[in-house]
Image (cartoon, rainbow, N blue to C red; front, side, top):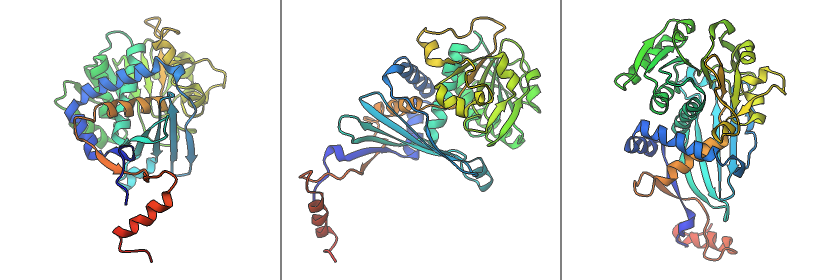
Length: 354
């Protein structure tokens, strides 16, 4: 029976190990690190294969694969979105991800990504705001206080310097949960009774709701001049959060237009409505915020390069931590042509072949 070679053993980061890694690094430090890693990869945007995620939609939700490659490393994420899960005590979003060596096709990392996706989504939001939000913004409205909200709040604090978060959710228990989790973390927290109250005095508005439907979380008359909108919740066909008229008054920034036009807020607009790719702003090829009265909108749906960046960030920090398991998940016969013989020799360890 063959002993697995080093290429056959794949590091696996479990949920428990991911949580330990976060605490080892520090939550806010990791959010900053992920933002920097994503920005570095966005600055080499042309190096990546890009395709809209492959989605399987049902009445209950969506299951998606998100692949990309930079020519040296391949990565993908499996992720679902099932809003009704909350009623059964289940997560709305679960995920795992994989990196592989392009030269051999062998996997080099398998990781949970339910937690890591929450971190990378928050880091991406704050990164976009670093380029688009009003300078010296201090206050953010958070409309939707579910599983993403605390990560978003802390990312904006760590990356953008936000010190006040005004929270609203249709479920007051969700707001109380977020207030409790964020207590003592250096933020001034204000629980609000309506979206209108939440956006008072906010320079940044984050919408992060979970219902799988076209909704109007923000109406046109709620959005004044000069704000930055971080729209996260609209992330599949038929699911939006903003009134169309807000989009018509905003300068819109997206990750990857072919995907965002299907899944984002801009699915409400004509297919040729102008948008700016965020990587171009980061690279100095396009302008971001140009004036105090401008409304900027980051129409965020999540893109595979962000997951690639997050997985590579984790992989680079594993070696000396021991925060992973070694999985024997690639068949590794002594003779690559004799896979059958490898199977037969395993009989010695099972008591024979029937």
